Length: 246
Ligand code: NDP
Image (cartoon, rainbow, N blue to C red):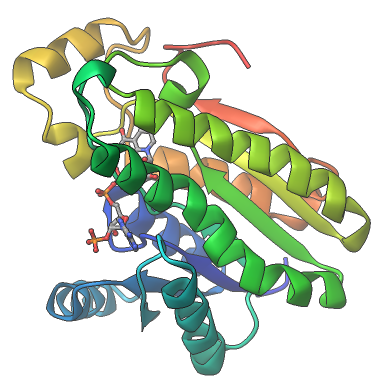
């Protein structure tokens, strides 16, 4: 397929790094955002050593102005964004009766509002150029809910509502919009969960193991391909069989 320009938010994280690498392996020019310059530069150097040139632009995706400035900087460095992967995300887990407004808002702003904040500045360009790919990295817990994650599950379910509306509005412009809903992947986010809890999680996964970041990157690359141009508004579960609903 033709080489395109891709922006992967949260590209320095576990799943994001795998997505950046996979898209670069497919010949695309890849950029990501960062918040901490020192951490990002170290990551960029590591990527360079592995043979990957990934552009970096500073920006917090949870605030509209920061996200818009980050997109402008990406476009200044590498050109207009053709492929957007809304991947940046956080958890602030606690049962709802103990949840603070701050824990709720942080998770909604980072996981869900970020989809508005980053997609809004790139969508008009995609419509003008008549080609685009927008992919949300949601979660199994947005599909089935999860004890202690009312904030996260609400944000992740909302991401798919965003997907299916944006898909309808932009299908005639050669833009597809899809969701990937990962199950539990062995990144820092999941390795931060106590081992005893992790063992219980793995026991619920029919494949008997956590997923690999590369397995999510593969799902993303499937949606990116030119051959996937008729697939829009889909939610692809990649969860080792743990949840087989919508
Ligand atoms: P990581 O914690 O490894 O990476 C998260 C990335 O998001 C980091 O690069 C982080 O940057 C960035 N980020 C967080 N908040 C912001 C913000 N406000 N502005 C800009 N960047 C931000 O997580 P994973 O790789 O595990 O997760 C990636 C996505 O996949 C998330 O959306 C997550 O919810 C989803 N997911 C993960 C699963 C898993 O099992 N790991 C399962 C299902 C879904 P920084 O270094 O600055 O913090």
